Structures are given as C-alpha cells and as structure tokens.
Length: 369
Ligand code: G6P
Image 1 (cartoon, rainbow, N blue to C red):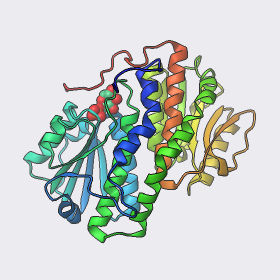
Image 2: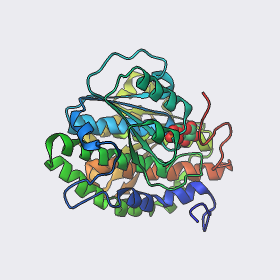
Image 3: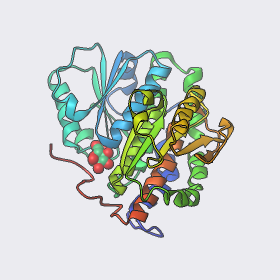
Image 4: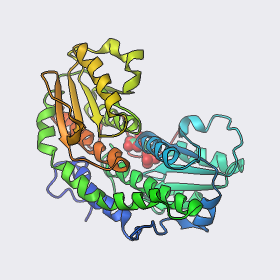
C-alpha cells in the first residue's frame, strides 16, 4: 500500500521521491489540450469564480508558504488583489469588508484548528462570496465546511515535514488560477500557457530528483553549522522560506529566509564563513538583481550554495558553489526549485541523526489551538 516504506529509509524521502506521481495524480483528468477541466467540487464553481473580485488565502506552516506563492501568481496573471495570512493571526483580527471575496484555505490535513477557526469566523460574518479549500483529505473538516473543494491527490503524507503535499498544493493553485482566468475571461494565452507548462511538470521534477547524490554530499558541509540563511526573490522568496522551514524542522539548525534585496537592511551583519547561504536562482526576470545580491554576500566572506538554472551563467568560485538545474518555465520554477531544498534538509538531518519523520515537539496535524 502507499503507506509502506518500501525501499526507503524514511517516509520523508519516500514522499519526496513520490512527487512526480503525486503531481501526475493531481493533474489527472483535469487538463485538456488548452484548458483546465473542472477540478472543483461544490455548487456551480465556474459561476462563483466568474464573480470573484478579491481573494484572501489563509493557512498555516508549509501550506501558508504555498499561499504566498499563489498570491504571487494570482496578482501576476490577473487583476484580482490577493491577500495571504497565517490563520492564527487572521482569526483574531478585524477584517475590512471586501467585495465578492473568495476565501481560500490551504491545508494538507483539513483539520488544522486555526485554519478551521478562521474559516468559521469568515462564514459567520458572511464576509465572503464563497469559501474554497485546497486540501489533501477528502472527508476532512475543511472540505465539509467549505463551499468548494479542490483536492490535492498527494496520497497519505506521513512525514511531519510536508513535502509532496506542498508541491501538489502549488499545482492546485495553478489549476485554480487557470480556472479563474477561464471563468472571467475565457481561454487566454496565459491560461493556455499554464496548461502547457503543467503537462511537463512531472518530468521536470523527476529530472531534478536526480540531483539527490550531489545534494547528499553537499549536506556534509552543513552538519556542523548552527545557522543558515536562505535567499530568493519574487516567487522564489516563499521557496526560500519553505527551504528554511524544512531545515529547522528536521535538522534543528536555525534557518531564516530573506528576500535577497532586503539583505542590506539587516542580515548582512550576520554574514561570515560560519553561516552558509543558500540561494535559489532560476533564470527569471529578477536573476540579475539576485546576482548582485549574491555578490554582496560573497564580498563579506559568506559561503554561498546556489541552486541555479543552467542558463543563468553563474560562475562558481571558492566561495560560491553552483548546483545546476535544467531550464524551467517561469510558472513552474517555484515547484521545481523546492525539490533540492527538501533533499538538502533531509540529508542534513540524517547526518545529524535526528528523527526525520517525527521531529521533536512537532505534530503532523495541529488540531488544538
Ligand atoms: C503542522 C505540520 C506542518 C503543516 C502545518 C499545517 O505544523 O507539522 O507540516 O504545514 O501543520 O498543516 P495543514 O494540515 O493545515 O497543511
């Protein structure tokens, strides 16, 4: 069954390697040649999407990071303003009234107490047009309480540190984005591009998983460290946040993420040879900006590990190690660049001898406040 460990030492590693399959399952039956097909369950999903004028995303932990990337996509490819907030804050804050608001919750388990409470609050105040959940568990509280559901088909996720649930949430957000565009504007070049890109995704993820042995070796350089800094720009900033979260959850190394342009406003003061800096550098519009940020770090004696697109022309040197990834469409980059960061956290944790699948003090699903 899908909850056997099989050839793997840990669920986390198994679940990382299951991602091509989990993504394929999440896309299955949902893509036509140029269109996203119905992927939402609930009453009249396309009629609801057609009316949406604003979006609020609420989630916790890794699912919150998916929401941050979702916002980036929604605001890049539509004119719909999108806000994202962690549920534990949102539920206790006054919300200004918004017109035709779509409330989106994102959750692997569908049982996270803060996320459920935030949804209840919005429903009680009738402050939204409709609620939609992106969720991995069919019969969960969130799917029951929401008007619409978009299921991720990741299968059971056992490792406390979320991996395949995260990448399938990102796939679900892209499906939703395409559906939203189709509902409001009909098929457009962007919605067609989304569909075409998504179809190549499982294959690209498979290719990047082949970096595993290289990353295993790289992990040795992190075992003795006490801190690490993750950098990204644009939609890669939440990817950096997720990389830092994975590392702290399972290796107990203190890790932070920063949008690279913000380095000069604080974290540069921390940079020395004892703090490894990990950057994600796909070949997107912000690449040149990122390169100059990396140079600021190098000039201060920092040691850099850059996951970069083959076409980014980053020249490695003593202080800058470059790990090359295949070129990927912009829309897929956050998903693809997440994979090496998951593997890095896993191998560092293994070398440190922690309980990778059940890190101390953490729970898979937090069903109390
Ligand atoms: C816990 C888990 C995280 C997860 C978060 C949100 O903290 O350890 O891996 O991201 O809950 O869970 P959800 O099920 O709502 O996605």
